[in-house]
Length: 333
Image 1 (cartoon, rainbow, N blue to C red):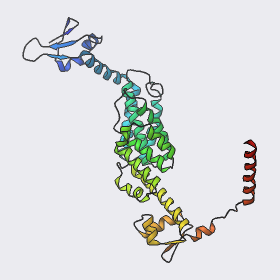
Image 2: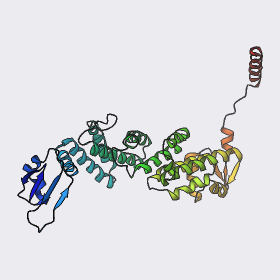
Image 3: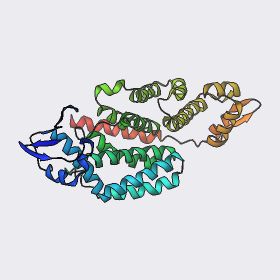
Image 4: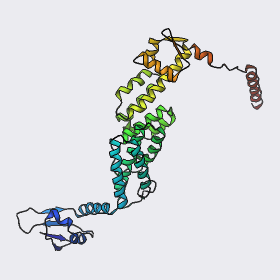
C-alpha cells in the first residue's frame, strides 16, 4: 500500500485500519493536504479515497481531547454525577455539580467569552449537558431558587450557540418547565416575555403548548382544566410544578368560596376543589386554612370572616380630596 500526498508517495508498511496509529505517518500527514488517496499495489483490495481534511480534523480532534487534562477531568466528574443521579443520591450530585461549575469557568470557549478554541464544540456541548442535568436536579430536589439560577446559566447555550453546536433534544422540555415555573409563581408578565422570545413554530411543540394551554385555562378561570391537566403532563419532571399549580388553584377556589358562602357541605367543597376523598379535603384545610372549620358535615367559612379585621373607610377625607382635585383641574383648564 502507498499514500499519494501532493503527488509525493509515502510507503505505508501497515494495513489501512492501522495507519492512523503509526506516529511517523501522523507527523507526515499533519500538514494540510489537497487530497489523500490510499490504494494497494495488488488488485485484491479495491482502492479507497477519503477526504483528507475531514479525516485528519477528526483524528487530530480526538488527539487534542486526549491531551486536554481539564476536559478529561470534567468528563470524569460528570460521569460520576450521572451515576449518582441515577441512584437518586442527590447530596452527591449537588457536591459534584459545584465542582463541575468551578471547572467550567476555566474554559474560555463558554459564555460569555465564546472564544474559538480547538475543543470549543466539545466544551460547549458538555457544559450544556451539565447545566441541563442541573436544572432537572433542582426539580428533583424541589428547589425553585436553584432552578432559576441553573436555568439562567443554561439559557445562553440555547440562544447564543446556534450554528456552533447541534440543538439539544432537552431544549424544549426545559423551556416548557421554565414557563410552568413562572406560571406557578404567578409571574405572568415574565411568562409572556419568555414566550415572545420563542419562534412561532415552537408554539406547536407539545412541551410549550402544554404550558400555554395551562396559562389560558388559568386566566379564564377554568380551574377544572388546570387540575385535570396533571394527568396529561408531557414529561415526569412536570409533575412537581403541576402539584404546586394545583395548590395555587385550590387556594384561589378557596378564597372565592369563603367570600361567596358562609358554609359549604363537605361533598360540595370536595367537588369544587377536586379532591378525591374527604380525608384529602380535611388535610388541606388543616394545613392551608386552619381558620376554616369542619362541623356537622359542612365546611364553615364564617369563622374566617369574623376574624378578618374590618377597615374603616375615611369617606369625608376622600370627598375633600376629590373636590380639591376638581378645583385644581378647573384652574389649569
